[in-house]
Amino acid sequence: MRKFADDLRRWNRGIIGLCAGSIGILLMTFTVQVGEHVIVDARQIAVMMGAFFGGLPAALISVFMIAAFRILKFGVNEPAIVASMSAFVMAVLSAWVGKYVVRFHWKWMAMTAVSLIPVAISFSILVPHRAEMLIFVYTSFIIACSLYCIFVLGMQYRAIEAQRSKERAELEVSAVKQELAETIRLQQGLTFKMKKVNDKFIYTMADGQLLYQLGLSPERCVGKTVEEVMPASMVSYINGIYERVWAGETVEYESGFNGFTYLNWINPVRNSEGKVIEAIASGADITARKKAEKKLSDSELRHRRLVALSPNAILVAIDGKIAMGNQQAAYLIGIENEADLADRSLFSLVPEEYRTSFVQAVQEVKSENDPIIHVESKFMKFDGTVMDVEVSIAAVPYNDKLGVMLSIRNVTERKLAELRLQEANQMLSRMATKDGLTGISNRRHFDEMLDTEWKRAIRESSAITIVMCDIDHFKAYNDTYGHLGGDECLKKVASAIDAAATRPGDMAARYGGEEFILLLPDTDLNGGQEVASRLREAVLSLRLPHEKSQAGEIVTISAGVASLVPQADFEPKMLIDLADKALYQAKLNGRNRVAATVS
Image (cartoon, rainbow, N blue to C red; front, side):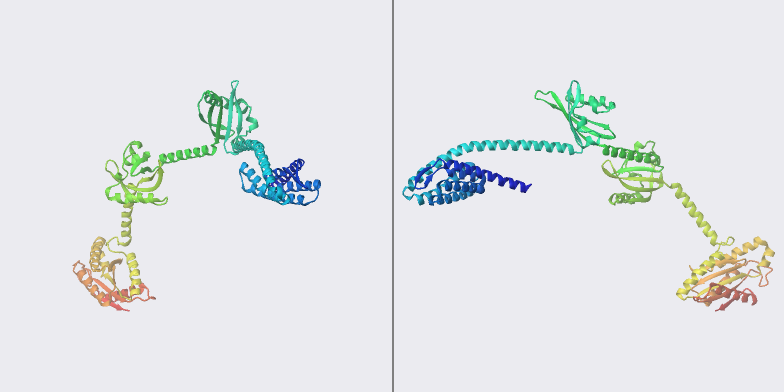
């Protein structure tokens, strides 16, 4: 396009040059001879016109044509050569002035002035004796012609500029109309106008992308009535809206068409007398927005139903005040109606000793990035009853503010059940480690403690001592005093043996039947013998009658003591076997005594 425009400008300058040259030739037919082969005419005006309208190219073309005609008509001579050179200089100077002077009148007058310079020089060369008079006359003539040209060309120039301005304005208006039409067509919504003709509303303009999305087009709407465009089910509704607009009301309405929902704004257009002459409307597709609103509404309904149907108590609090809650929350706190929860202090429901930690949990939820915190606390009913609760807390937006949602479960009964279960487990644990008759540790517990102390002794290279005891002639005691009497004897002997376990790590246990065993960590053989001797004396001090005993008239015990420092390849059974052998030795030595074995 640019190359074409440049070519067009060059052609225009060429045509201007040809026209200016033709005018110059025409002017040369009216010459005045002032010397031999020296003629005077108004060709200067033609060169100036070429430079004025076409620049240097047009001026040079006109000079070439004028010079050629001069030589052809008057021959080749000095005046012809000087005149041609003068015309060339005139063209260059005029074009230079035309390039830098912008205003029409100043440009023409400047061209006139600079073009007279080469003319004056030519007169001085060709007719020096008459140069001053010719320069004065010729300058006066050319100035007069220039003034006339300024007047005539000025009128023409203004007419041309006026026409050009009008054309430019029309083009601009046309471009604006085209751009507006294109904008209306490409907009995502729709724009339409309508008039009321013979009690019918007729569309006079309609365009926009929404129009096409609705399955319509300008061709299907413009010049058509509402009845011809709209479905029959919508005609009455649309005509009612248009009647309101025609009465002077601005109306905004929603409507559905071909699966789309769109929002229209219709404004009446009045004439100078205030009468409505047409209406213009714009519409926007709000299908996605309506779907989003429906989705949001459904989501809110689901959440409200979930809150209402939740088995847990649900509270929402803003700035420490209860904003809403479900019926379960009302029951939990001890009121009948959930609406009565509003504006009550959330933290007043928490006993004072738990309030600080509860407030911290709420603040932490609001300051973190979408956390959910689970806490155990206590709540008070309005009647002062305190209950155990588990609370899940999360931050939620509510009425354009950041609040907290609490899901609360009353776990008082569960806590009581857990406490009862804990007590039962503790009882079972005691029953699993204690002998049911004597109340001291049983053999199972002794084996566990021996294994634990054995491993510790290996790590610390310390000694372990055990004392194994047996009631002398206990079968005879049972036969004499009965099993109830035997049980009482076992209890009292067990109590005496248990009293000998004075250190935290010592442990007495019933090993089986009438056998008892005493575990003494960090104790050597001598220490074990001392404990065994005190144990024997403690049983003697009970003074329990035993008339069938061969060891004396009261209940006695025999004790075997064994001690060793465990090694990694030793087993605890080795120590028990050594104590058992020592006990056997005590019985062989006459009973009611202590025997010891060293490994």
